[in-house]
Image (cartoon, rainbow over all chains, first blue to last red; front, top):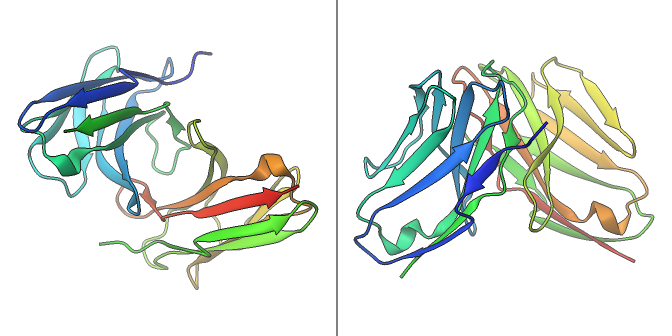
Length: 113
Length: 111
């Protein structure tokens, strides 16, 4: 069974630009969650999508948005990039049950200059 | 804001030593406690998902216990090996479905 894939793996952008990251979950998984990891902050929850609907949202500004397609693939968009958005962005997929084990992708390393 | 705390922040042990880490979480509205291992340049990998007070889980040399009434979980590694070097994360699921992660314990096992 193929694991969770994320593209691109690395990205360099400048302040003010926008970026779109992609996540393909494990086949059959309907839930995709996104996390941001910055040094000293740990993994911070961004949002979760289940069956094309945002089911849960973390405490991030509206510049961070996402969507999920009918095949469960998900995209995350960050508009008007700031230096502080430089981070590793991880997505994780699961069956969608509360407390289900989540399977993580390799992440996208975003650098904002 | 949920508070999930892990200690110690980092740990260096010799090969063959046994070690343990602590995860503290809110004792109210508990649903599940997860442990993940995150090796450098890899994805976080689930070790255990624990839901019942008193749960004990074991996978090889690694085991975990759970106390939901007082809000803590311990992760034990017996006879540490260099390949155990990683960051160990715990994550709490409460009334909300999302996982709230602690900041992790970085373990280095010296040969």
